[in-house]
Amino acid sequence: MLTKVLIANRGEIARRVMRACRELGIRTVAVHSDADAAAPHVVMADEAVYIGPSAASESYLRGDRIIEAALATGADAVHPGYGFLSERAPFARAVRDAGLVWIGPPAEAIEAMGSKTAARTLAERAGVPVVPGATQPVRDAPHALSVADTVGYPLLLKAASGGGGRGMRVVRTPADLPAALDSARREALKAFGDDAVYIERYLEGPRHIEIQILADAHGRILSLGERECSVQRRHQKMLEEAPSVAVSAELRARMGETAVRAARAAGYVSAGTCEFLLARDGSFYFLEMNTRIQVEHPVTELVTGIDLVEWQLRVAAGERLPWTQDAILPRGWAIECRITSEDVRNDFLPTTGRITALGPPAGPGVRWDAGIEVGSEVSRYYDSLLAKLIVWGPTRDLAIARMRRALGELVIEGVETARDLHVRILDDAEFQRGDLDIQWLERRVASLTEPARDPDRIFAAAVAAAILAARPATAAANPVDAPETTWAATARREALRSPLPVSGRRTE
Image 1: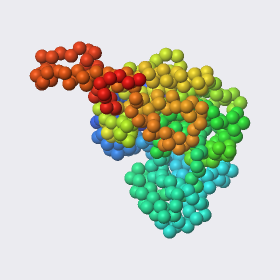
Image 2: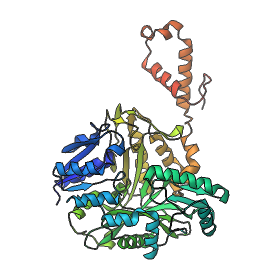
Image 3: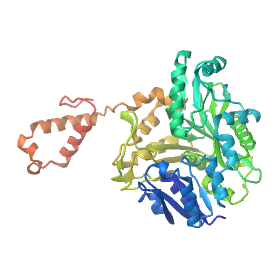
Image 4: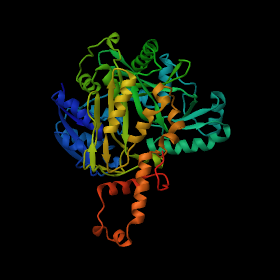
C-alpha cells in the first residue's frame, strides 16, 4: 500500500481524497496558493506546501511545482482529483518519470481519450456507437460548411480538447455557422489552449447518461452502473442521480458492456467514466470518456457500496478488483445536488465573500462533501462549487423527499448559493416523474428562478413598510434612540427581500 500521497487539487475533492487516505493509513500532503493558505483542505492534510500565487495558472496548474513538492515531502504518489491537471497526459507522464505513482489511468490512455476526435475514432474502431459527425477538426468556415452538409442540421460544434460546455455551440442554419465557429474557437483556445473544433449531429431531447467504470492493472474492467446527468444548464451539470429511471436492467447491461469495451480499447486502468447520449427510442451514442474521478462519483458509491477513491488508491498500489460483473447491482437511489456560489436570479453570476455561517444537514442517508467551513473565503479565482449534498433512499421518491428535507436544513450565509433552485427542481412535477432531457433545465430555468410569491413574506413586507412609514424622521436618522423589536427587525428585512410591491394588507 502507498504510504504518503500528495493531492494536486483543492476544495472538496482534496478533502475527499484525504478521507480515503486516512482510512487506509496513508499520510497526505496538500498544496495551496496564496488564496488557499488557510483553506480547509490545507488544515486537514498532514503536511502542506505552498506552490504559488492565487491564479490557478501560477499554482494548481504548475505541474513542475507540484512534482517538486511531492519529492520534497517524500510522497510516493500523486492524486490529481478532477479538473486542473487531472486529464493532462504530459503531467501524468512527468509524475511517472519522476519515480512517483500516478493515481489514475496511464498517460497513454489519457492521450487516447483526451482528444474528443481521437476518442471518437478509437470508439468507432472498438465497435462503440458514436453520434454521427466528423472525426477530424474543421479547418475553416468553408470546410465546416462542407462537413455540415454531410452531417446535417441542427449540428453541434465541440472543442476537440474540451469539456464542461466550453467551446460548444448549437448551429441550426448554414448562415449561423461561420460566426458560431469563430466564437467556439476563441472560447476553446482560452479554456484549453487548443482552438480545434469538430462537428457532430445535434440530437434533440436526449438524456445524458454516464457509465462509471473501474479497472485494475490485471485486466479486469467493471461497469458500476449508470448516472442520470440530464439536469444541466449550459452543459454544466447541477444535479445527478443513480440509477436512471430511463435505464432498464437490459439497457444497463448493454451500456455497461459498451463502456467496458471502450475502456479496454484505451488500455484503461483506475476509475473513469464513459458519457453517452440516450435517445428516446433507446439508442445510445458515445460522447467521450472522462479519464479521472467525476464530481458526481458519490451517487455511484451510495448505490453500489464501493468507495471509488479507495479503489483508485488500491489499484494504483497494484491490487486486484475483488468483484465480478454480476455482483454489481444498484441498491436504492442516490441524488446529488451541487451547492455552488452563484446568484441564480442574476444569470447565475458567481458570487464571492466570506462564509459567515454554515449549518450542514445531517440525519439518515445524508452525506455532505464540502470544501468550505465558517470563515472560508470564496474567491474569484476558482470554480464556484462549494460543496456537494448527497442523499440515499430505498426508492427514488424517498430519496427526493430526503434531499428536500436536507436542503431545508442547510444553512450557508455570506454568499449567494443555488440551494433554493435545487429545492424548486425537486418540487417540479416533471422532475418528480423523471421526465427529463438535457434541455429540460434550460426550458424551465426562468420559472424555477423567478421570485417566490410567499403570502407570509408579502404580509411581513407590508407590515414592515407601514412601520417604516410611521417612524419619526428623527428615529430613522438616529436608530440608537429608536430600537426595533425583533419582530419589526425581521419584518424590515423581509421588506427588503420581498420581490413584490406591497399594498398594506395581507393577500392569500
